[in-house]
Image 1: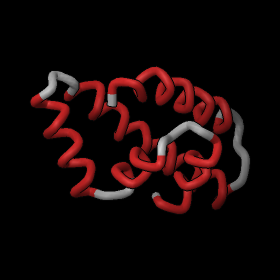
Image 2 (image 1 turned 30 degrees about the horizontal axis):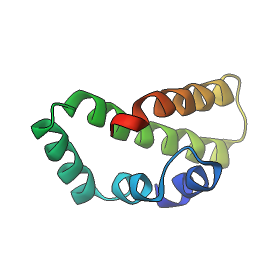
Image 3 (image 1 turned 180 degrees about the horizontal axis):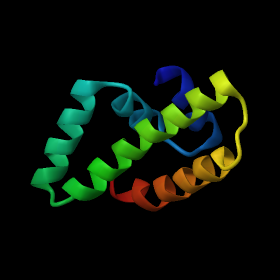
Image 4 (image 1 turned 180 degrees about the vertical axis):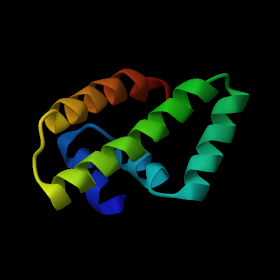
Length: 88
């Protein structure tokens, strides 16, 4: 996860803090619990779930190479992360 999400910080899709949290199980648990108390549970959970999905798609892309639709999925995840990011 660390390897495939690092580039997202450089591209501006994730902040350094979001990257650190996304790559840590305990960080994600703490962020999600904090979001629960603040009424942002669903938004936070969706954000970090999408980070995992993005990392996996980028892993697949690196291992298998480009397949039809893979870049479209990655672009969709970038867009969804941008929408969710301000509230996370």
